[in-house]
Length: 495
Image (tube, rainbow, N blue to C red; front, side, top):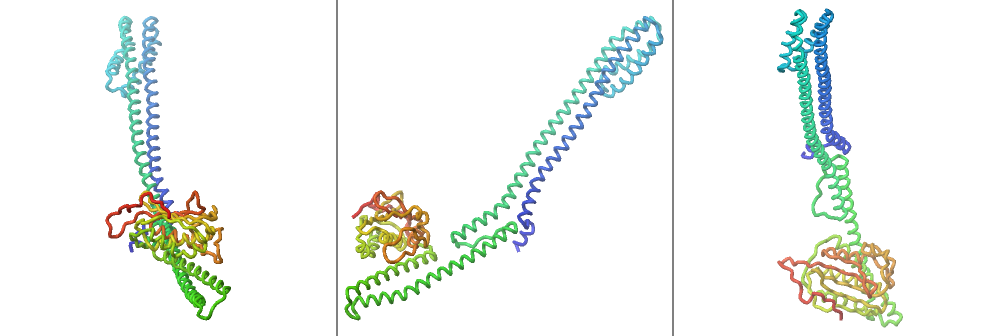
């Protein structure tokens, strides 16, 4: 029910999610562009209106100055020439001046010079009807009239400058508002980008972790269902099917190994029992040639039994990943492994050098025994006849290092990267009638990883092949501390 409700508001496809993300991220940017366009349009309109008004008002102020000059010139010429046409020109210029002054008074309603100029203009309007002597006396007022006209022009310029400053302040305010909106909307776009990136990447990461879990074979907890676009949910369902299919194949493989090992061990036991009865002389004395053939049969049976046990060990490791650690003497464990191969070592003519004990360490006896058994078996199978086998032990930085080295043919470089793969057999062939299974080193490496350790092929200055097992210090379940075993530091003795 929860999944159904959750899916109602989620995009049903990855394409739909990407398109919605694009639209949501672009929406704040579109709003920003729209607001910026409106602000620029408003500022452009104000600038255009202000420029037109400034040009008109400046032209009007200059015209007032020119009209005042023409009025004074006409009046003075009339005082000299006494021509009526000059008075007509004076009256026309005065009327134009009065009209322009009225417009200028709307621009400067509180300017004292405008009011005084209007009063003086009324006085100068009566000039054409005055006698000549009175007219000449009135001519003395024209310099004051011209000064007020200049003052009106300067006041007009100041008014234009004030208006321009107001527009500039408004433009700065709009710019600041645009910057603030830009920061807010771009931040919102970034948040939306991060949100939708998380919505897309989260199911991808879930699928990646799911694939890694399938590849590693981890089954400790059930996987969480992927929540996201339909394509990724469907891919998660395909991964469920793949995981179940791989689990079925793994179970079938383990069952096949168990049945095959059991079916091989049963007739092998009969063969070895029969060869043992023949060797004991139950059916009569055997000739030397018959004894030699019987020894060959018995040796091949032992080799076949070892291969079957390796298959069983491999199958057991695939099923169980638990370790049971205990404190024991590693030197004793090594001697037990060497005792199992004493006859093979004697037939091979190999000289064995082993470190002295006791070397106490906490580890899994069975897993470590498997590792040493496989390494010694490989040294016998691939080492040189009459060669050397050395087993060393030392402690470094809280870990135990066991080295098994033997003389013989070095491992080819091309085989080293795949040396610990299951069922991989390199170019070097075993010495003897039977071919190896290719799982000995794989089992050994798995046993090392089971104990959080590592098995690696390392270079040795004297011997051709050297495997190093590194085991960290483990803790017993009942122990609250780990102490460094006495007599272990720097130990690398041979006997």
